[in-house]
Structures are given as structure tokens and as C-alpha cells.
Length: 474
Image 1 (spheres, rainbow, N blue to C red):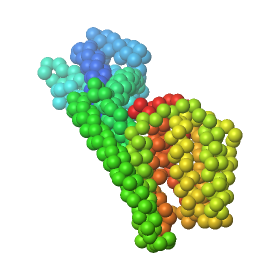
Image 2: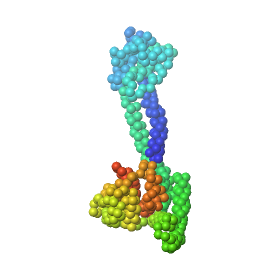
Image 3: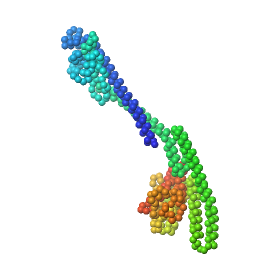
Image 4: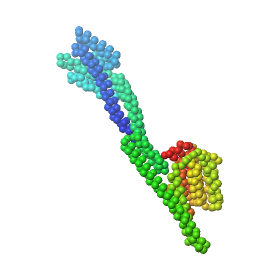
């Protein structure tokens, strides 16, 4: 969820910053240009005041008019030398009266000519279009020279935009740096916000996974996050408490029922044996009743074992896994030999891991029993132990008929047995008991096909105390 929520928040904040940044950048450019235009207006006004009393016929200067014209030309030349800005005074026909540099003249078309025409109408030329950092060119500002209410000449300045573009770009870089800093702060705030919002969700997910895998003591601390998620955490804890109570009642019922039924069933089997003494040997009905009674007794025993296994919190300790496996392989070897099955062990002499030795032995017994039971004569069952990182794996691979992909999803369910193996004795609870015995210590039991034929059961145990304690305490 965080990978979806965090990018969404970042995109929204980036959109807000960009929505504010573009108008601000445009405003900064407009302010910089307006300052330049105002300066040019002041310059043209000063030159217009000097040119106001210059003779309208600059080619026939005389007296005071000639002195004013000389002063005007000197001012324009010094202005162009200092600022690299073209400046000139032009008569109504566009002929230069005084210009700097001396070779500059009004073009027949373009922005300077348009500004000149506007100034002839008695008003200052309108503001030039906005200049952007990637545009080259010059800014033109024109002001009329008015004498006795008439426009007698026009002052035109044609300034380069390089300094203006540099100032705009510098302002934009500062703005970009500010927006970047704001974005970094916003990202950090978004990370903290999503962490605060999603922390209860992650805790709920972990607790739900723990409960789904059998660690019923797992709970959520409802003291962080938004109020809605805190209420959800409290509701989850109430649900987990109720679920644990229901399961505890179910386990107690199964254990009590199995125990209470075991005694009458034992008495019934005893009466059947006594009754068989008065009947001929090999009586089929008595044999059938005795067989069903013994089968029912095994089911009750397995139900009691399952209830006890699910109730047991486990006591994992540092254990030599290889030693337990070799011991159980040795114990089951005579049973395998009677069925014509070769039971072998392959692996290290010592491999330590965290497990409850009694629970692991019982679970391994059930898995090996299942493998030997379904392996045909002259086939083999191989038990291997290997250390892989922080785990120890026990693999029991048989040479039986195996299971289909659909059946693999059902194996380990209570009372489930493949329809192809109904003639094999068993209650269908052995593997369920194994999984229940292994779960409290952080171990898992998984199944996969054994190529070319058979089933491969793998018990995975943790090698460090952290994983085992995390599973035990929830």
C-alpha cells in the first residue's frame, strides 16, 4: 500500500509546487523586464529633454541649437559606450539627428520602426513583449520629443537583453532550488505521514498472518496511527480474542470427547474379544467388527494427539537436527525392511537448529510413516538434511505414486486422503498433527512432487533463536 500511497502524495505535492512555481517564475521575469523598461523610459525621457530644443533641421545647426546638438551626441555616445545600448534621436521622417553608434539607423520594419511610429502619435511606445532566457534580441523603447505641443522628434533606445536574461535565469535557478528544497521537505513529510498512517496497517497484516499460520497469541498495539485505524486495531484484537476462545473450546471439546469415547470403546473392544471366544475361529463378522473398532480407536487417539499438539505452545531449544533424524531413520528402518522398502539417510553428521526435540521427533515419525506406507516394494525412501543459510531442511522423498497438483493443495487437511489411496490404513490426521507440532517452533512442512515419481515432504527449521522465539511468543 505504501508503494501506491507515497507516489500519489508526491505527485500531488509536485503538482502543487509546479502550479505555484510557473506563475511565480513568469512573475519574476515580468518584474525584471519591467525594471529594465522603466530604466529605458527614464533614459529616453532624459534624452528627450535634451533634444527638445535642438533645431528640427540638424543639418543646418547654428548657435545655441548647434551646442545642444553637440551635447546630445556626446551624451548618446557615452551612454552607448557604458551600457552597449543603441540610442538615437530621429526626426519625423526617421532621419537620424543624433545616434550612437553612428552607423545605427532605424530599420524599415521591425520592432524599432513600430515603436518609432507609436511615438510619432504623441505617446510612449507600448511595452515590448516578454523576454525569456532562451530568446535573443533587443528591447526597444521610444518616447516622443514634444515642442509647442507638436512631436518634433522621437528618442529610441534599442538595448540588448543579455543581462536581463541572465537575471531572469538566476532568479529561476534560485526559485528551482527553493522548489527542490520544498519538494525534499514535502517528500520527507510524505514518508513520515505514510509511515504514521500505514504502521497500524502493517501491524495488522503481520498479526493477521500470524493468526492465519496458527500463532493465536498475536495481537496489535492500538496506540498509533489515525483514530479509524486504532479502532480497527482494537476490533481486530477483540476478534482475535474471540477466535482464540472459540478454538480453545473446540480443542477442549475434541480432547474431552476423544478421551471420554476412548474408555467405552476400549470396553466395547474387550467385549468383542470375549464374544469371539464363544464363536468359531475366523468368524468374518467378528473380525470385521474388531477391525472397525480398532480403526475407530486410532482415529480417537489421533484426534486427541491433534488437540494436544494444537494446544501445546512448544519449547524450542538448540538441537542437533541431524542426530534426531538419524535416530528416527534407524527406528523406522525395520518397518521399511518388512515392506521391502529401502530407507536411507544422507546428510551431515551434525546440523544444529532450533526445535522442540519431542515435537520434531513426533512430526518426523508421521512424515516417514506416511512415506514408507505409500512406497511400493523394492522402491526407496531417502531422508536428507541440509543447511541453507539461516535454515535447516529435512527432506523425506519417497518413491510412491505421488499426488496431482490439485491433491497437493489438499494434503495436510484434516481427515483428507486421496481417493486413489483409500485402501491404505490411516485416519488422515497424521500430517495435520505434524504441522501442528512444528508450527510453535517456527518450522514449516511443505510438499512437492518427487521426480520422476513420488512425494517430497520438506521440514524447514530456523537456525537462530530469533525466528523460533518470534513464532513461539507471537
